[in-house]
Image (cartoon, rainbow, N blue to C red; front, side):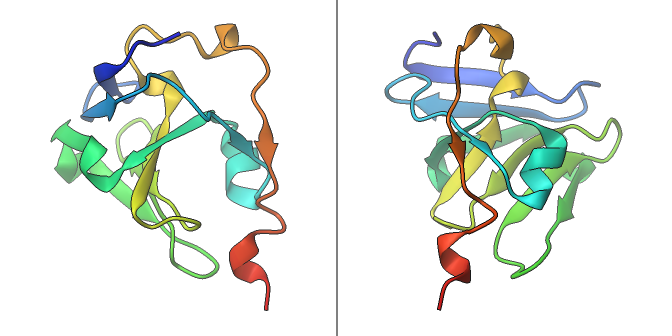
Length: 125
């Protein structure tokens, strides 16, 4: 498991690099079953907005939004890898693609819970 502290990550082609600060290591990891997340299949972690910093390739990031246009999903425009997103359920946090972190094997993380993004709390009256 990834230790607490600062960790580096990147997209597949290396055009985008970022750093996340994980005060408690990789905790509260999740998958989501919404239409977007189920297609990309990523394991996500979360940090406060000031806990993720793009260190290279900001100009290579593409933004995708859908439905309520609240969440902001960022992808490398060169290789297409999802690196992070500003969360819909908590816009004060970034979700990040755990598989993009240097030295993390997402297949060794065990069972990751799935959150119900199909029935998102923000969609309720």
